[in-house]
Image (cartoon, rainbow, N blue to C red; front, top):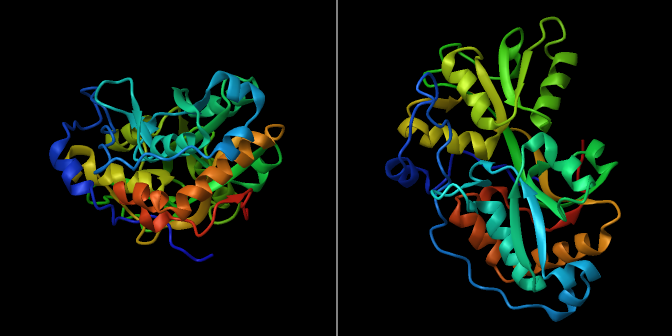
Length: 308
């Protein structure tokens, strides 16, 4: 498919920037990323699909809930609400609606991004929903139910003092990135190709917030992140006066998916079917529109749709 990844056209960003209490990242120790604004309108409640409920694994039906691992520092996909406890965003809204169709409660649990898949392996979570990029390498170990398409962005200081426009401009420079992310791997691939003669100095951090703080302080010239996240942070942090996106077009669009162990095919298939119902009844597009992310909508929900 050729649908474009999310761009700067996030319809709620102006309101979020005006209404949130934002601080610059740097010496004061203020938060780098603002709380994700609530959806403009809650999605309509879904009816339980008894057939899909019956298809769930026995332990899930007995528990009456699924526990979902996420890293709640990645708006607009997921972040903590103002109570610093409730996890909100695109992913929680989609998962909650899918859970309603499946007839189970959805419980989100926050963990550092680089520990999510390990925790899934250990049975701490039933699945992971954290804007995880579906890649061929990850598919060797996990199954993905792909529900979104995103590109990548280069986030720089406002005014772009280094004059960065694309990947080639990062060669030989220090760049911040989320630890264990696809973006970290992509930077490594750039070092093997575009920047082979003058490699990027890659600095990986536990959260996207930490990476942005390096850019704000001047220790790194840019942060490499998902396009929707870069757009949100650039438009909201410091009232939109701290960062901007250097590249004019989102780079390397890739699918994003819910992650399951290879053994948990029943739960995987149930969530795929629930998401398909959300697509069919219009709730999927409604939820994406609440976050201004319609441009990342997929035409169909797929399993393991990675191309690279």
